[in-house]
Image (cartoon, one colour):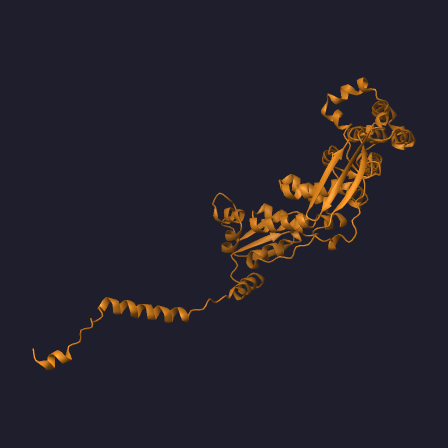
Length: 390
């Protein structure tokens, strides 16, 4: 080979066609990715859907609810509700081929049906303590699970507000009937732990009998003492008597029905937890004078308990309802509770401790009033420590 050829020879390998293509593809992909942008135009889409509902454009089904008619779209309804999907798509339902369907709703639900239907298109709805119940009822009826969860969460967080606006007992009754356990427990606990306040609301008269009994059976009712609880129950009975008078046809029927109600409810008052002085004062109560035979037996149990007649009250311990008579509730009277006062609570340093020494009676019985239990409680920011000293 001549020298010219040797001088012109290039020893570097040429890139293969496949490598060139890969490199080119990578460069193009990098350029493509640098030009990408995620567009969120959901607000505009929701606005279009909202207008579709309000303007009733292209509606293929109309609902008559009460005296009003609402246009809607099967596709939206079926996507949001299992019940509407079955109603409008399954031949087994008479409504599936109808363009106009009449829905039977409760009067309180008729008033919120428009915003309930609008939720299907927007995912938004204004919930208040006055409309959450009918909205939840519609969401449960038509199996709109997301809306049901929102309503239940709202109710759990606004039980005190419901109590102050006379909604508490309707919430309690509905959650019981429909198995909404968390709402039911939240409402029940609020009633137990704020019993005196709840008893002074106009809504107290709406407490149904079975639920009232269920509450009175609980040990963790927070109340000043059993005498105060008795007075609250007496007030509830008087409110029920007004209803009985409205439903009964004669005075004899009123008295008989009221007598049965008094005995059914008052059996859960724990007369042994009243002091002998309080039991004596009860003799002046009008309701006790009217139903003396029933109350004398119950009050006698209390006096025997305080006098230490253990053998005579032993039979009551053998029955579940009887045992409850001798279990104290969470009384806030001075003899059953104490106040721990911590100054500047919110600015206490982490190393600070507060110790509280207290004493309590070992028994509520008068004949054992000399037996006292002493203990102490230490508060450390973030935790409590306690100890009993007999």
